Image 1 (cartoon, helix red, strand yellow):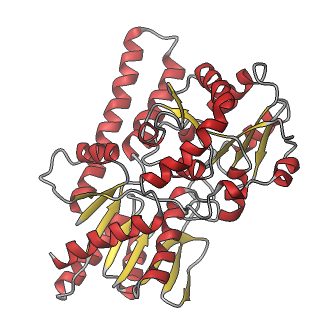
Image 2: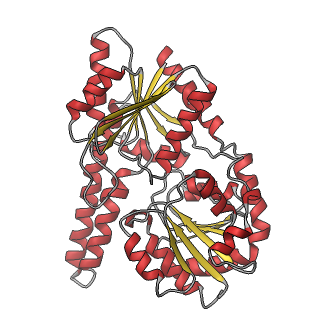
Image 3: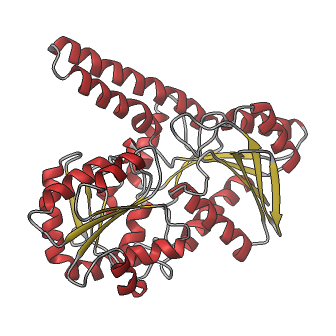
Length: 408
């Protein structure tokens, strides 16, 4: 079998989607006799193969304000690449230009009496994260001092945009042979996208973590010292994209409120994104706040996690929370927000959840978690292991569902 992933979200500094694809390719290489081709936009056209694994890049422009991410801007060129690579199964990781080329490719294969499946993985609640929530935030900022009528008009506009996005992406999901979600909550949300269709092709496939790599034994006092942390320091860490979708500025505000209550605390933010420069400027005036580049290797990130004391995240749009389970596997309690998949990831005894964008509540719970971190650390890792959130389990499930669909 020849598998293919199509996505915009695979760059040197990408987060969860790249982690998922890299883990899938390792599984294909080590556990199967199959082949895998990854097709992504890049600075120029290119193709590189290592054994049964191939990466194909198609030249595409940078997405404005989202460098280093790029567009697939020539759907016909993407279709040609698929026809040249001839995958049997195409999985969509993003849903803008990619789907239409994939559906055309499937049609071409079917016309020539060859099987082809096109699937989608619901990595992000697109309608909420990219349409509804950003519009609500912008309009609230601009209309909060206006009349009730204008405020209601703004909210209606945001709801209309989200509704339109749901209809668009729902139509794409309906055309797929299979659509995967990483958690029961996101499976329910996916069904909402598909409410206008008679659809029974959604499947639950939880993501995973390398439980040997992300392990408390990687804790390093030398790494802590290089960050300016002493043995008494309570080191908070966030790792991920530095953009408005992740509400990173709420973390900084919460830390600013925490610092007088817990002077030995430090906050380490590692990643890349549109807010990086703004966060770096803030770090120059806020004691204990550090901004570091994206961890260049999984080993480096695993060591940073294990060398920290608490994981903190304010993003309300997580569909699974991959970085959260990596932190838990590393023995870190989590303080996050009561939204998205975090409500499933952070169970009692492993951390605390607070209302979205409530920096004061987050600061209070961070102080409590800091006091309880030793007791919660073992429970956090135990939770990951007991719920079977490892990559081998993820891909055994995924490829079994593909095999069932192929044979059916």
